[in-house]
Image (cartoon, rainbow, N blue to C red; front, side):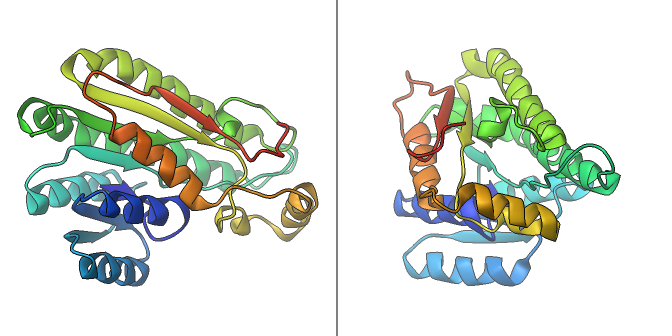
Amino acid sequence: MVTGASSGIGEAAARRLAQLGADLGLAARRQGRLETLAAELSGSGCRAVIVEADVTDREQAEAAVAQVAAELGRLDTLVNNAGVMLLGPVADAPVEEWERMVQVNLLGLLYCARAALPHLIEAAETSPRKVADLVNISSVAGRQVRLGSGVYNATKHAVGAFSESLRQEVTRRHLRVSLVEPGAVATELAGHNRPEILETLRARFSDMERLEAEDVSDAIAYIVTRPRRVAVNEILIRPTEQEQ
């Protein structure tokens, strides 16, 4: 199951996992995009279940996980990818942007992780692989604090702390919890910022070759295809030219 599967890293992850032979649950708010992606993946032999869901609504997140597990027969991998990045100084910032980041980046991720846990643990015990994977998509912002990214930094640091605590809790049960922390990626993520913030971001990255979503999906694929004895706890992946 991939959340935030309608674009960017989530869409690329779905394609890469389908190439590896996975059947997929695709969750996002934009059903039209999910339908287009599912049709593409189905054409290559992948079974794809689409779920229109807002993961910030706990009931919707729980129902989405339950539907994917029921329709596919089991759930042995969750890529917790849904996220938003709304930047700017703390002073005079729209508090609604903070609330949205906490709701999506943190609460949505928590809701999906909690709902998936019983399915993932069962898969680790009974599936052919005898191991399951929970991959939480964070950011370099979960490691590196920058001026103008305070609340975004806070949500991504929280994702890292949660992931490590959960890893320690379930790793003996062969549920691997992994954290992926991309740097600047050429996706639509930044496009939701206010115009003045967008201008600052364009200036910051104008001379940098950013990562493509497929670079991050390659890291996800590496994590979930390791032998049962190998757990990749964390991958920090930046563009070569990115300093921070």
